[in-house]
Image (cartoon, rainbow, N blue to C red; front, side, top):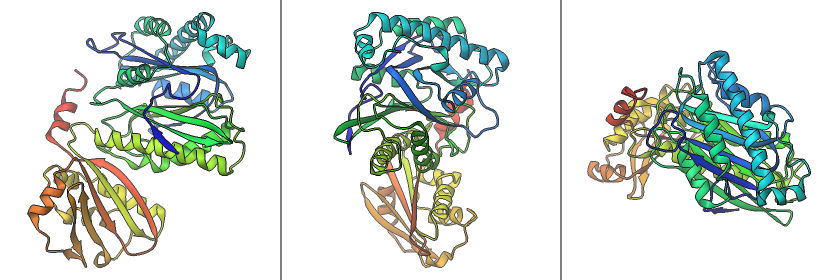
Length: 428
């Protein structure tokens, strides 16, 4: 597996576009679209919040069926959540507009000529095969005319360039400060298979799933059930292991589109090829998960917590998550304060039983590493050295439990004054 510089257009047959539709923002792009030349099998994971946005309901129905998918349309600024029947109607209207626009693009583009040679259904584009996604303020209705106009505008500038992918990633940002993209290639059956993705996520981030939109494209030829299995497994160890502020959104969506254009031998069983594909998917989503945690609203540092020596993987995950979600610990990381008592405390109320005397706590960063606690008390460390280590923009706490062989890693960020400032006036 090789990590490459790329976005959602890196796999064969995928195109992207962006536009400024003026949905809420007045000074930036706020819509993106991803289109495949050929029909895609799909998989999806979604928010576990009981309150689900209209696009989540729309997409979940499609990805749980055998309906082939050709495109995703995304808007930023308004979430289309808590919008009733009108919100669902706007999902339908957006999909209708996209199906019409993409069919027109297919009939006039060189890409479509290639697609026709591969798939004689290239022009049979239905709104049932269009995924939609929204992010932004909850409770506001979408200006559907602007969405429809945005879809039409994007259909005229679809491109498979690296720039198109990057601009699409930027167009779905809300409070994000950077676009988030990742891509990797693997060899399966003598063919190069590419997996790429873009995400948005900065606030309201918490496991199951964290607040985010993620769109994964791949040219792998893979069975739909196996694609869903791979995604579900990988999400548990990536997006479900990050937290910024403990809030789980109404719009969380992660979907994978696989169009099979790599022409690899089809992955139709949990073979070595499946494991190779899943490992590449894991590395792509892990990179994006870390980027989201590090770009938490107002954050100055990515805070990584690794738990080693737990009895089970599940207990290791619980312990790691307990530390990254501790507001007191997050505040200490912001202050570059090696307050090890807060970490031990967070481990202690996690619900996992352990002997505090056996725990060893270490901080490390690019500036070095330092043992801060062992045998149930402080390790007599140099406070100035600890502060220097904690002043880097990526800080790791290693918690050695000495109970077993299981390990897990979770990612979060520090808690700053700026987080409160951002969320105090987010709606306005």
